[in-house]
Image (cartoon, rainbow, N blue to C red; front, side, top):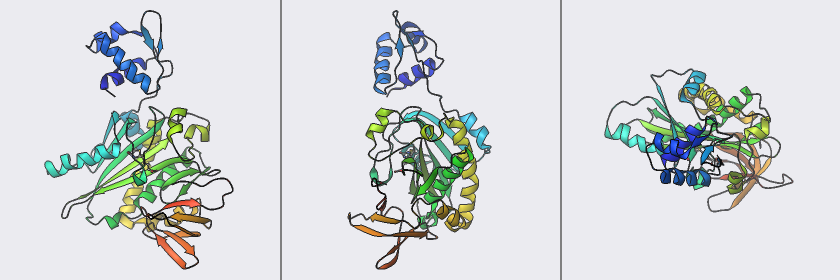
Length: 343
Ligand code: BTN
């Protein structure tokens, strides 16, 4: 996706008609390049309306993310947070992981404590277990938070991804969306049919005697179109289906960041234990019979009963109670009557 396509989309977001000649003049390119950009826009399933004399308009433009609205809502200080919005990137997690080297290892300067990057479109969004995370332009909120931490040992981050899931849940509740719950370790699913609404992917970089860097990637479905849904192999839902209204992504992102700001401070002070009871009370499968799928594809059946202080899932099996760690396993509910839930 070249940037001319996005420049044109930003221009056409005014909903007015623009001629190919005026677009080419504005962006100092040829009409041929404008038509090529239109092809790219078309491949994103964005339908522009063309009129007889090569005038184009975008009837239902997306509401672009807006860093000012995000920061206003989040009420975070500019000194410790920096926020970047980009039109298109492969993955916002990768974007921040690449910055780790550039910002810290190469320059050896003290970076801002927290960097946030949100993308209008990810071309290779990543999910857990090397899966793809699909989202279309304007239909999702996809962003990552890069946070520098003093701990060198990544075990200090155990439970972090669960806390992020809880922050998303609290934010949904703030928007009066209550028919959602958590699926261990960090999915947010609908209450009724366990359809996935949001997911979290945490990557780490750590070097001896240096700050560690956690990249927290968050993907939330706002209004998925059918083409995007067709790629997704598990049951999904979005905020529009759950709430019946279009929620402003920037405002939602700001609310979530405000909650995360406080929760991350508490997490860094007290660890996951601080959030454990609240997390368990929102767990979709607490006291339910579930199947855990291990990396060798074997399956362990048991009753989900509580979470360890490190965020591990406690499973009561015929052989006694066992703990499973984030990253080791994926979880399915057994006998839900309808279908299996993929992680
Ligand atoms: C999962 O449920 O498997 C995790 C999904 C995480 C998706 C988000 S979208 C923003 C960030 N960038 C990525 O490439 N992935 C995460």
